[in-house]
Image (cartoon, rainbow, N blue to C red; front, side):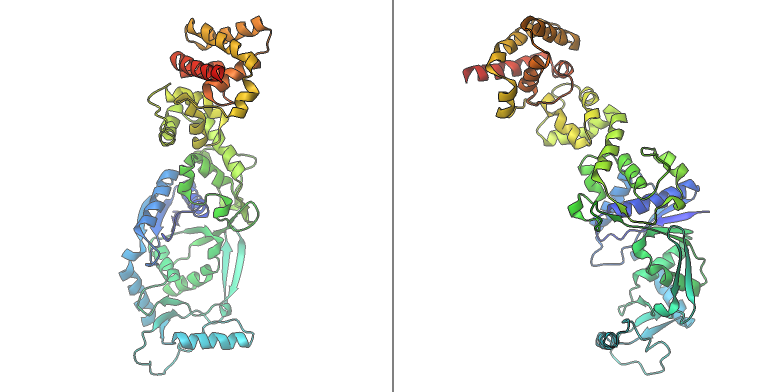
Length: 464
């Protein structure tokens, strides 16, 4: 049975690369009706915080990447790691190393002076010397001295690493705490992980971990290393390329399913399919479809995909997402037209929830147009026409059709084209030069509010 895992370190937020790795691991498990495990690798006690852990859990929940087991925390498994370290020591597969920091520094300087690759020289590997007093040793794994590690990587293809290139890895620090590469091995063994899907920044760790697994007589998982995500300029993705924290995308008004869809297409393809559900993705997903080359993050493409999802989304659901943005913008959506109706009118014109909220503001509080916009669209010659529009609006039943009929009649009476009436009306009532069809907008804002805004603006312009 397939068992995958996502194992973030809570030393910061969950970034896009981590989210994509989680998505691929999740989808692979779902595709094969397997188990997806969440593991929190929190052994870096200085940098791992409960707050960072919670951010990761919140991001997984927001994305909808549900895990079957976990979260498991490495800090709660210390007794198990010590047990396995003791086992390796007892079997002669690990040893105590008493080399001081000063000795190691001198050793590396000497190697570099000779043009050699700096590495531990295994001086304590088979030493019979008496350990120095007052020195707390580290524990090192006895890496094989000859042969090679062959990795049939499910994404990158075959990777061969000579054991002569690997030194004896520290598996326990001088204070007894286990190191990252060792904890990962024990966790993957105990949790019966069959497939390790992770970023290719871990490629160098894999041969070391495989050798430890072999020494323990543990089954080897299959490995697939996913290339990293770069910025649009080909540089490593960073804050200057836009938001990189997953939860920042929620704050900026993206839908989780849109972000998942975008991440799925970032380095993986199913023909020309661009927009698809997670059910479709899990049905189609395979590791062979992952590109071996790094992907480039494209904010415009993400916006386009988010726009497709907004168009299809239920307006009642979008209302709940838009409401906090409006309240933050001093708009109370409980006073004014029904928010789902406003969203129906606007959602095909925006890329994000935040843009949707910005576009909805004028439905809930008056906005004054920029003077240049007023000057462009509301000349002195059009003020009497606008006054006539207001007078006619007073007398009608407030429907979109009736509003349109008034505008159509006035256009005909004055020999104008429709924009010569529609644009000034739009600017005076909404404060914006661009909106959906003005008759639909006015119908939603409501008769009393439209007339109040229109009269106020006309009076101010007449006085000036």
